Length: 282
Image (cartoon, rainbow, N blue to C red; front, side, top):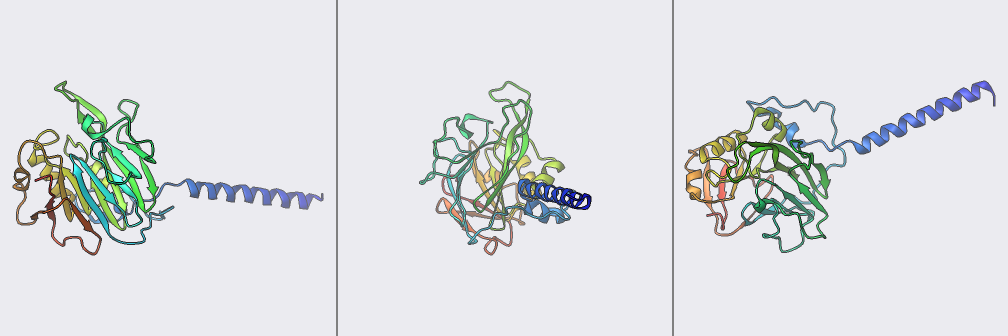
């Protein structure tokens, strides 16, 4: 082989290796959160820059309607346009009629998780890490749903005192253009960093127990800051839902639903923030 041909062959091989590595990096790059990117316009928070970032393996919906069904305690069934079934704070007691594709869990209390879920569930997402103090890291696409988490601290249970770092997770589901959040067993008011990580939430599922998580006044401040269009109360224990609703003024509408489900889309989101109390939470 002539020297110039050898040089050309080496250059071609190097170009192929660089191209192959670039393709591999592109495949392995995590999906970009559109809910965080759009939320840069929200006041009181400095959001991360997403300039130049492009979504990889985006969650694409064939329709626009997302259905929420309250199953009990903190468990909602979320049905996506593509037919993906998600169950939140899954403890095995409150189950969708069909086997879910994805279940999210919290380890704040045993009523928010199970270590023995049905074997057929493809994605069991823990909101905690097995390494003490370490945050769970979830960022994946399942069908037309992009699912990620934001870790928060929790108080130790049963009056032991103190806090467990990163023991709770807020799960965010990005489906059909909607940004959907489940606050889990939230014990402390969120920081600016948390709001930055969450981004925009169109729909939020919020515990309204009045103290097992946070008091109504603290929880209401979180909801007012999030400025979601649709607020779905859950985890009611002790005080009536009205104690939570009383924290909001004329800027929020309130509706007490006759059933346990609601279907929404980007087109049908309330123009004014709506606290929608489903049957079973009332």
